[in-house]
Image (cartoon, rainbow, N blue to C red):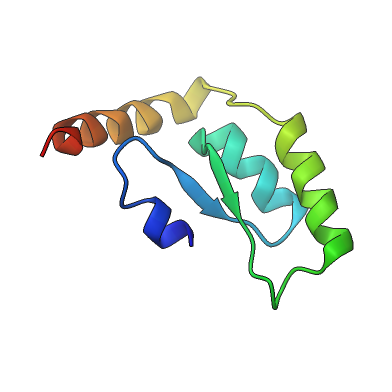
Length: 80
């Protein structure tokens, strides 16, 4: 699902399978959407991932130039 979501300009989706990947998706990539594999992530872990995701926010810092570049690319293709 994250592959499809990332086709939409302005969307940054990340497939998360553990708490670290959920936190880093938000903190480093400013992702707005989290996806999980239903055959990989069980209910209890899914709740834990959502809690970690919601508690995290974009940290900026060294990741800001990368996210700015992603935004530039998105803007280039938004109106096509």
